[in-house]
Length: 305
Image (cartoon, rainbow, N blue to C red):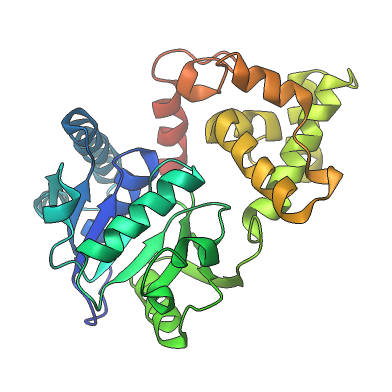
């Protein structure tokens, strides 16, 4: 069973954003015994998130990883709210999982700092944006930290814990322990562009795109080389489609701006594809064509493991 005993230092969690990452984060907290408020401005997005969580719980139930009672209790622990003001009241930890956009995240954290109780820890699921920069718009920089979950959140074990310049030892220790209570493996890293995961991953994906752009090999050939030759479970171009080409581009731009090194410059092909609206699975087309339900199929395969 995937139910874990939680630490007692906090109980009420708020998650900002009901997209793929937000609903996954809400899922794992609720399944681990925490009370969760999932917040999004769109009621439709919240309803879609609850359907996704239910579907993912059904997959776990079918594989006998959880019981019917576990599923019911997990769903009972999740409430939804379209108001950030009322949604974060009483939350001891708030995890922001909005779009990977610096201006948006700074705006959200400024609001959270004003709305959340003084003792609340503010975490961001950003995959590349500076924790120190985000913390600087608050009056509690010691209580701001990165919790970079991997997709799909209920399956992937890693949580990259990123300390900002002012993040306290106490908050870091609490979030490390909290992540372990979710059945995850937290890894502490420092606040530099891309952290560890994307500083290593995105240049590889970008180089694969450049290899395609320069006509060295085709999409399937590049992915096959990396899967069969390097034992990667998914080729870099397929992975880029799954992550979202717009997200890949945004992260590469953060790396390029942060380090000023041309090796991080996004491939022109990636820029053109995103400009043309080809964002991968989410848009139905990227390096591959993705039919309706393809993402569910990929997630289903991951949930089998």
